[in-house]
Length: 472
Image 1 (cartoon, rainbow, N blue to C red):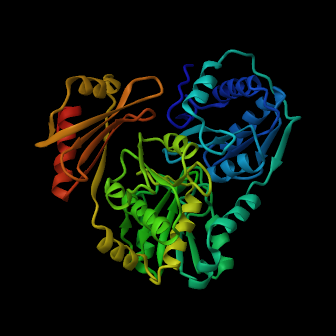
Image 2 (cartoon, rainbow, N blue to C red; image 1 turned 90 degrees about the vertical axis):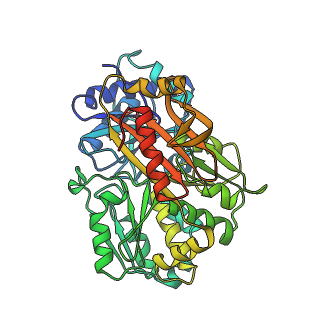
Image 3 (cartoon, rainbow, N blue to C red; image 1 turned 180 degrees about the vertical axis):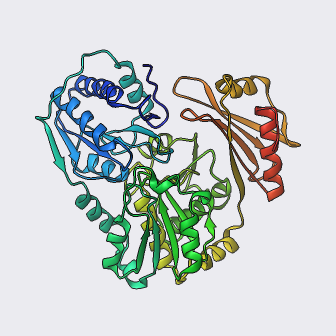
């Protein structure tokens, strides 16, 4: 079987691609890589709620143990950021998380974590990939030790989040864990602080209770309906492995990831006065640059994929790094996404604002910072030429999109050097189109920002015609 790693590890369909056989192949290559570095520290392993995740974690651990590597294996379902924190806290050589994150339940996958807790670099991932099928697989459980990673993680949250402010406001909060690894963790943290908290789908589920565990508007109907019919200050949702967050207003409305990023950056810089720059992926609103760029707050733009944010976080003083998919990282915490931490930061933000409802706070922020006009569409595309669409468009060139002159084109490449993303920056402020080809799914993603909803619609339609040959 050919195994190819994407921007955030390896994912595949359960059974046909992701199975005990293929997992141990990857584990052996990972063990060879760890041993090639002469690392003496243990490797931490966690797993989410998906079918066979705990089994795959055990098989991975036994393979490492068989190769003389000490393993700390999570003793229960564990969010990815908790695993990432454990890697750093216990001074591990690396970490492994069995999860397919927000992908559908018929998928599973493996994420690698570096010693700093962030994702493996492209170079590290390539080295593991190069060792696939090089060595016979070895198995043993002698060096596997079970561990509870939660206490150290929650203790760290108490040092970084203003629990006194949250306790003082005692806001009622609705949480949606979507049947994922977040389970009832937020409720467990918030209840002792005096918050009235209810969790939707806090029970772990292999199929996420029949939902897609990506915290975006179309998947959050249970949360939005409960908010509309209840009396809460805000709602927060975490994805399948709890490294992403989605936010909803008290009235049941959706707070887009773009607006969530704007509110968090505004809070961190204006209220908390956190020093350092801001990192945004190419799909995040340019409103961040317009509102916050300064000599003291440089804005770094990177291609989509949190590992590119992590690379900058490790080199520069950074206050915040965010991606449009709801993955947010903080320089004070980890060079990695953390949906639990982000949810608590949103609750702290509202608790210290004087407002009792997120809708009122968001309206005040929009009055100060301006509106964001943005949209994204995902188009199913399973034709054989999928991976050639963007390279061909890049070669062909594009002078304008939907009548807007293109001033600059940014090309992004996969780890294999293939153009898998094109951003067309049009003349004017906050006006651009981004087209990306997914490495793990048969999907072409289009993102656009403009100065009105009509402009955004026109840009997306123009992008479809340019890339695929048809419009909306």
